[in-house]
Length: 123
Image (tube, rainbow, N blue to C red):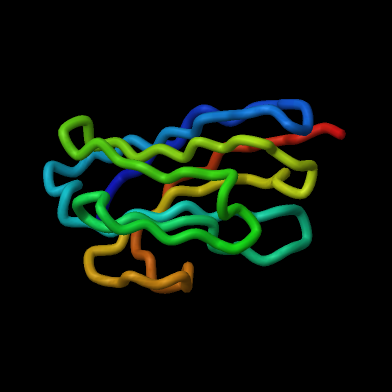
């Protein structure tokens, strides 16, 4: 199991930007598919974005496509989520997750999770 720590959340006005980071503890970070998920109050955890081992393949939820960019730096064992043109409906706790083999959008198939970081977008 991988230990993950998110950072970079905060309060921002609609239209603003934030960059989230997810630092991993494992030396084998480059062998994990990584993903970002979010959970708003009263709602289920939902997929946001996913990135392959090398970073060459990315996949986004329709709700964030064109506004968010996922990336990773395997040398630094860190994944990022650049969030632009933020909307109030993006308000949620954002989680990073790691999977050793699964490349889908089901959060139940990701085995390692961070503690989450709060993102609040004001209108």
